Length: 194
Image 1 (cartoon, rainbow, N blue to C red):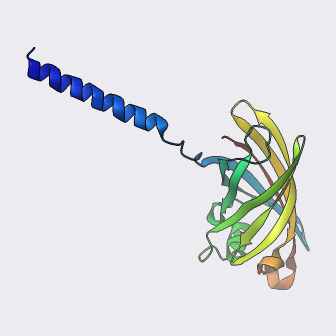
Image 2: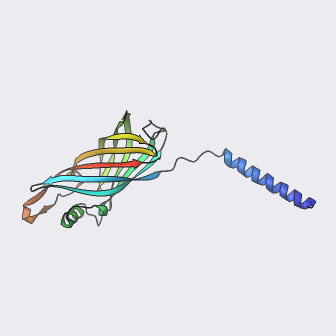
Image 3: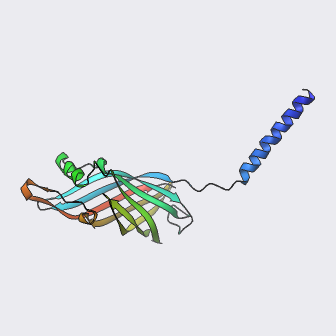
């Protein structure tokens, strides 16, 4: 190998070493958000019978510097639960159609909850944030059960609310014989991975 080749090789190796050293000194990027699946069941009653519809949603969680929770030793910086309105599955297609009409699915395709704060006590947490249905956003607080899993944390919780708070008109069918009551219960569960 000639002197020129050795010199070029030495400069290349020095360049690579310098770049690697510079990369090692860069600050670590903030933790990226991870998306996980969450199952939701929405139930209520009417003047004739009870009803339940289900939907698969998602949770996007970014670990951060805050109070630790099971499965997230460094706490949670941000969390958003998202429900695709058109994803609802009901026991009867007519029931699903009434639900999508009430939720104005053609105009509002998602229901979202954005976490603003939380307080942890053992395997329980009180989550506080903003819930958006249609174009109405209101603050809500509800309990969540947390249990560490090998790959993250299992969550489970429920929230009761009045649909009319969000501008949702409860369906009325059969010339008014069947009226859906405005109070509903939302139950959810899923595995959130950091």
